[in-house]
Image (cartoon, rainbow, N blue to C red):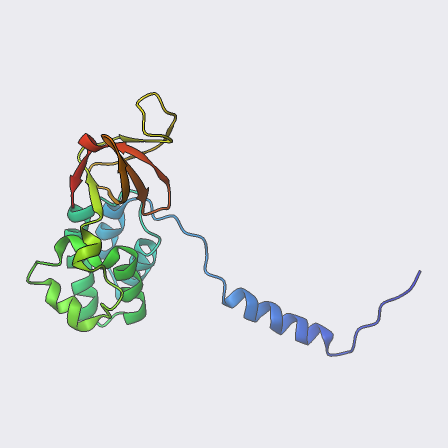
Length: 191
């Protein structure tokens, strides 16, 4: 049996490498409910630290995101965060995760975000034309363009998708979480 010998400084170097590595890892997060974290952000007695914690949770892209309705709520939160001078990088992350709150881009208050944040990555008017919005709760996404095709997912009312093409009455879509499938055209509204 051979013995492996390490230099005397090895434990220190290894410890430093582990600390640096762990410090750069972001914890896995699942937002849960937008309403919950907006309430935490806006709640009576919320501190700026608590508000930033709520923004981190919102940065995980909440599963109950409902397009324009959620954008209106998030607009108020992000405007407040900018006014409070909370972490600008964090505010930018939330803004980017929710595609620049495109559902409220025509709201007069949106201008405050436009001047405070980087909007260079925001969707163009042309890109917005390729978006659709679920008309109903539990709108089914199928694996093929047929009513008999396997269900691969569902959307809440107001959820936004990228429209990738059409096959008859069916629209090929990609959700913001990356799921691709087909929805009947009657279930989608123009964004």
